[in-house]
Length: 254
Image (cartoon, rainbow, N blue to C red; front, side):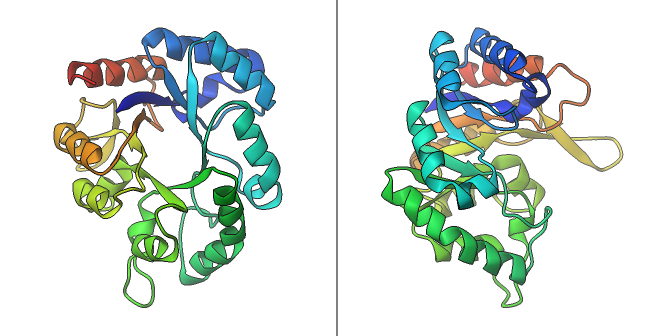
């Protein structure tokens, strides 16, 4: 499996093209060879291709705007071909960070044609989970289970976010097993306890999640890219956080 950097971690440094270019260089200097493009400024596909090449990087996944996926599907696929990325990702279903039966049904109805077109073009659509997908529908099923039932593995990949699965009170390894052949791309972020009985994100290896077990499970179910992400670095330099995660994962032999 390949260690990658989820650029959402360093989004505040990639708000314009100059900053984005410098961000890619810094990520490459840490040692990463693979990235997920998410949360950055807008860019031309040719520009990204050139910047990736200049820094010895590849892009294995994006988070693409929902409107672009729905309304500009062909262009999205063509642009991904230009910068060499098969996997087209969505950060969350539209709904303001929550899901109801109505929101879920609308997501499936709206996105099915685009997902079919993405699949037919030789790409794969990836959905990134938070915790809200582990709430229950009116029929008693978890929305995540309903999502897996709605689409076969070859059409719908899941960018399993280890932190949010743990946050939801679910077992990361169990869900990796359930999502076999869907989890080529996995978000790694750690969870650490605080003194007020709350939790927060941490560099991989700095918290309490069992990443030896998680990574072993990921390998067994077809995981290919372990993408380090930390949404909030709590005033610590995000590049330092990315390096801490990278060093920990390399110490595990990855």
